[in-house]
Length: 223
DNA sequence: GCGACAG
DNA sequence: ATCTTGTCGC
Ligand SMILES: [Mg+2]
Image (cartoon, rainbow, N blue to C red; front, side, top):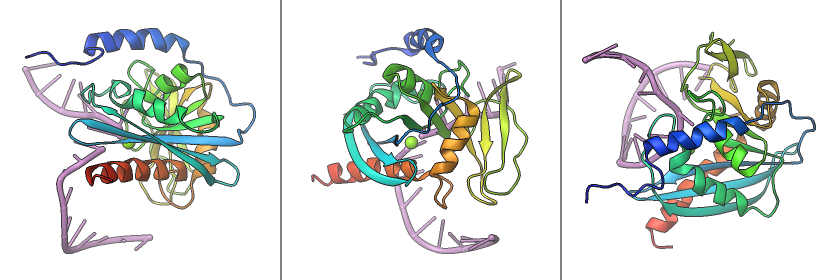
């Protein structure tokens, strides 16, 4: 009665990361995908509500949504976010009618202490290109980007470029973008900018965020 | 030992 | 992330 029932403890989780990080591939995205997906999660006392949404990238129009639910199996530990919401998010993405050409994840890609944030983790597991889109910094140094929409600067970690600090809206706090898998920094910035519709957060992620919270609401109300 | 620390 | 009303600024 003192044991936590996690699939993997802190140490085991780190071992999984050491294994997965070797499979992360950073490379420019050749062709612009037709479909892009975004995923996010909301929480209640002991449940994880994940959602995934599918958009046509060029038109930026929503095509489909999907959901998945599970029990919380891991605490939030900076650097180990994937073990808290990764699995449920992956299940939600798998429930989409078509496999997306690229996925946006709420969190870091390789801009992570071990080079394997949740976006990279999900990308490697699903073997699909992913982009990490975080609202704040986990690691790295950078110079404040210009104040105009589209301005950005590189994010460095241990002297290496690991991402971009991107202004998606004029005079508003920038986003921390980093490639997850089968993607590079420049391609990531391009993809994100194609998804900004006037708000700081890219449209698909705004939708995923709303869906997961709506799901939690409906569930708590017994719907 | 202290401070930092995605969601 | 979540708990929550009003308030400031573009
Ligand atoms: Mg989130």
